[in-house]
Amino acid sequence: MVGNKLVNITDHPKVNANEKELKRIERAFREYRNDYPKIEYLNSFNQERKRDYMTINMRKLTAEMMASLVFNEQAEIKVDIDSANEFIEHTFEHNDFKKNLSKYLEPMFVAGGLVVRPYADKNSKEIEFSWGLADAFIPIRSTTNGISEGVMTFRTMNTEGKEKVFYTLLEFHEWDGNTITITNELYRSDQSEEIGEEVPLGYNGQFEGLERTAKITNMNKPLFNYLRTAGFNNFSPHSPLGVGICDNSVSTLKQINDSYDQFNWEILMGQRTVLVSDHFLRYAADETGNAPKPSFDPSVNIYKAVRMEQGKEVVKDITNDIRTNQYIAAINQFMKTLEMQMQLSVGTFSFDGKSVKTATEIVSENSLTYRTRNMQCTEVEKFIKGLVVSTLELAKRTIINGSAMYAGEIPTFEQISVNFDDGIFESRDQLLEFWSKAGTIGYAPPKEAIKAIFKLTDEQAEEWYQQVLSAQIGRDLIELEERSAQDELGAEE
Image (cartoon, rainbow, N blue to C red; front, side, top):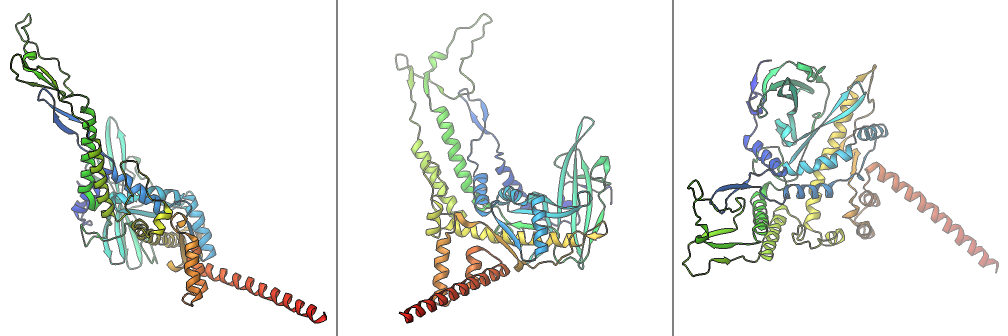
């Protein structure tokens, strides 16, 4: 009902979210932005001062690394059904899906979640993709198979007069039998931290033309597709949300940042530390009768005034060497701890500039990084297959100019293949050697070997296998003819 007022999304009667989960996601993104409070310290006058907190943004570095390992634009997505494959290729190309997924995987690994929803644009007559990060999606209902109902949030800022006004669209996805009901609610607030009061759709030109409700019938799965990181959510065992790859390493990240901050401060302050006799701080009164203050730079803590006896040393340089080796060793040790917590190979991170392991070494050692990466690939593969099915189901039920956008068959997950372009990790020679040995001793059929080595679907592997058989039969016939000709020549001699 228009007029409802919400401070937080959890105030909505349909939303029963775990506030601890929302705060965890908020913290992850805050650290990803490198948003830390300033450090307070006392200067040489015992005055309070503030300075920036110097950090190594490991939230971004780790997520960026994992995203680049899991998916790149050379990946191939194929559907065994020709009409479906053609439609998906066009839709994914239109939405620049591979490039966008490569980009959005980074914040997904930061906070643990990413949602994509296809929708039909009747103006462009295309299926478009709407992307949402972990803080823009809240599940409403879930099962062991995944999230079935949820709400996506879209936030915009507009200037009305001289004031900034914030609008929030809540898009609810709910099931009624095999029908998906989408409900849109618009809220307006002059406070950025509040959702605000509900207003009609189209208010001040916001989301004009959007219907309050929409229904999509005969759907087999949710329209939205939620991608979560691999592994169990140990922070909230009953939550369907994923966790960021560094969420279990918060204390280690703090140790790395604290050490790096102290190292930088020691470099900044390491140029000089001088003890000055308090005799230098006694000045004659000025014309007004007030004693002048010492003219130290108020932004530094270099000079220290101490009481000294007359005739003793009045200025003493007590500058110490910068503890470079100690700080580098400490930071590297904490990075080793981070590698262990994230299940990455030793040497993945290094603060002293030493080279990390090559892809060949990673493969040959069957490293933790390779196995961890494969776990994430499994989740991404399931997500892509789900998006393919949702896109085709939506297109099949969307009528434009009297006909459906897509009229073909809806594929199963088994009819969809995702080739992650594992060339940097997997050696095709090693795969070929493994499957050749398995085939020689009769433990693997040829079709399965072709499917595994070349990342094909069952149908594609079958086509390849038939072509290989045909070529082999042709070679056998040629060999038989050559042997027969040789035998005849031998008999004539």
